[in-house]
Amino acid sequence: MTTIQIPNATIDKITTLQDKCLKIVLVTRELSYGEMCTLFSQYQQEATVELEIDRDLTKTPSQRLRSRLFVYYKETKKTEKGFNSWYADALDQIGNSYLEKLNK
View (cartoon, rainbow, N blue to C red):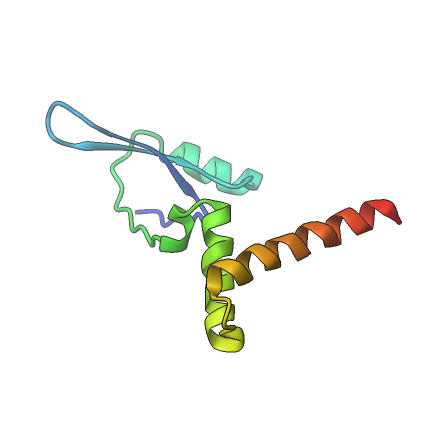
């Protein structure tokens, strides 16, 4: 059996079939010619698949940013205004820093 490792693939779709099996569609990053050849050579062959799921990838980018800022806030800030107020100010600062880059 050939072993193929595909880092950072995204589960695009999961469908249940009539025989209670699952059809899983993966979207990969750009693959090298060799990786593509290896994959195509295994077309319709039975395979053992191991999935390592990064739970953080199930969040939207804005949810990930909010979670990361919360960890930062909890470890370093803890202002009396509370996280939501600090978070709004932090996003405003981030947005302003990008606007300032446009004005230079």
